[in-house]
Amino acid sequence: MFDMALSIAVVIALTELFKQLGFSNKYLPAVSLFLGLLAGIFYVGGTLKEQIMYGLMIGLSAAGLFDQSKIVTKK
Image (cartoon, one colour):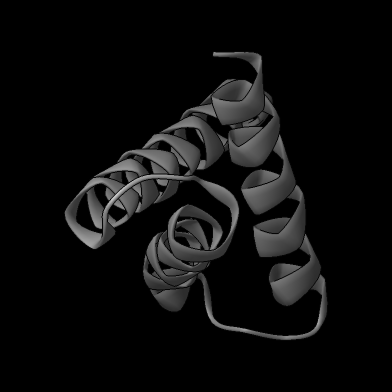
């Protein structure tokens, strides 16, 4: 479980890096999803289906946390 949380944090950090490099905000959720899929495939063990599922969970969780942090900081 700790590995999953660490993966989400790394994907959030990398998404922020892409933002700083000039990527448009509308593409950042797709970047999070793509990075999550990469993390799931290359970092998580199991069958390919499990790796893809974990990758989707990592990417979508990171995208959701990233969006929520933007909402909180704007208030």
